[in-house]
Amino acid sequence: MSVRAELAIILKQGRGSSLTFWILIGLLTGIVIGVSFPAAARQLSPLSSIFLRAVKAVMAPLIFGALITAIAGNGDLRAAGRLGLRSLIYFWGVTTAALACGMATALIMHPGSGVALVGASPPEIAQAPTGFGSLVEQMVPNSLIDAMARGDVLQIVIFCTVMGIACAALGEPARPIVTFAESLSRVMFRVTGYVMWLAPVGVGATVAVTIGNGGLGALGALGRVVLTLYAALGLFTILVLLPLFLWSRFPFRLFYEAMREPFILAVTTTSSGVALPSLLENLDRLGLPKRITGLVIPACFCFNTTGTTLYIPIAVLFTAQAANASLSTTQLIVLFFTLMITSKGAPAVPRSSMLIIIGTLSSLHLPMESIGLLLSAEIVMDPVRTGVNIIGHGVAPLAISRWEKG
Image (cartoon, rainbow, N blue to C red):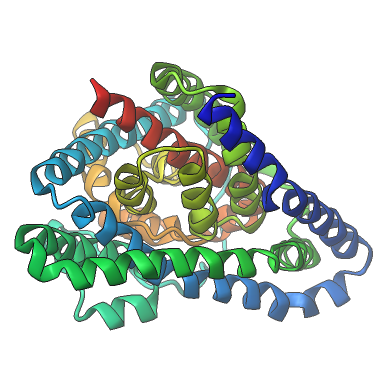
C-alpha cells in the first residue's frame, strides 16, 4: 500500500469523519432552533462566542510555532526565501484574478439596479486604513503580545516571518528557539483536537443565533447582488482554482478528505480563520512538506482570501450603481489598484471585508447607506464567500508545492 493510501485511511478513520458528522448534526439543530424558537435561539450567543474564542486562542500560538518551524526548521534560509517569494507571487496573482473577476461580473450584471438607498443608518464600524502609508503602518505590530491579544493575523505573520528569518540566519545559536517552536506547534495541534470537539455546539449556536435574529428574511431587491456574487465566485472557482488544482496533480479524493472538516467549519461559522488549525493539521497528515504548509497556510489567511477579495469590488460597485453614481474608467482603474493593496490585510474573521468596503466608499465619496443593506444579506453571501476562501487556502499549498518541485 502506498504512503498516500495509508495517510488517507488514517485521516478517514481519525477524528475527521466522526467530527464532521457531529458538526452537520449541530448545523441542522441550529437551523431547527433558529426557525422554531427564535427568542430562545438568540440566547445561545454565549455558546457561539465560547467556541470562537477558544479557536482564536489556539490560532496565534499555532501560527507562531508553525511559521518559525517552516522558515528556520531546516536551516536553509535560501530555500525559505525562495518559497516565501513564490508564495507572495502566487497570492498576488490569484487575488488579482479574484478582483478582476468580481469587478467584471459587477459591471456586467449591475447588481445595484433597482435598489434605492434611502434612510438606513449603517452600523458603527471602525474605519480601515485607506492610504498606502497607513496600510504599511498597520502591518507593523507594537509588540507580538499585543498582536496576539488582538488576533491580528497579518501582524503575527509578519513578526514571525522576520523572527524565522533571523533564526535561520543565526543557525545553531537559535536552535533552542526553533526547537521550542516545533514543540509548541505539536502541542497546539493536540490542543486544537480538544477544541474542535466544541465545534458542533459552536456551529449550532452560531447558526441558531443568526437565524433567530431574522437572517432568513426576504432579500427583496438585494437578490441581484447575491446572484452577482454567486456568479463571480463560480467563475473564479472554475477559471482559476480548478486549473490550479489540476496542475498540482494532487488526488481529488485525498483533497476532499483533507478539506471536508475545515470547509464545514469555515462555512458554518463564516470565518476561515476558525478552520486554520484543522486545515494545517489535515494537509500535514496527507504528507505535504511541513516547510510548505507551515509557511503557506498561515500566510493564506492574510494574503489569499480570494472569496472576500472578490466580494469587495462587487459591494463598492453595487453602492455606486444604487446611488446612480457613474465611475469613470480612470476611477475604476484606481479602485482596482487600490483594492489590490488594501484587500491583502483583511483579517480572517466574519464581516472583516466591511472595514475595507467602508474605507473605499469613503475615499470615493459614495453613500454609506448600502452597508446596512449589504449586512442584511450576509447570511446568504458570507458562507459561500468563506467557502471559496477556504478552498483557495487548500489549493495554494498544493500548487506552490508543485511549483517548488519544478
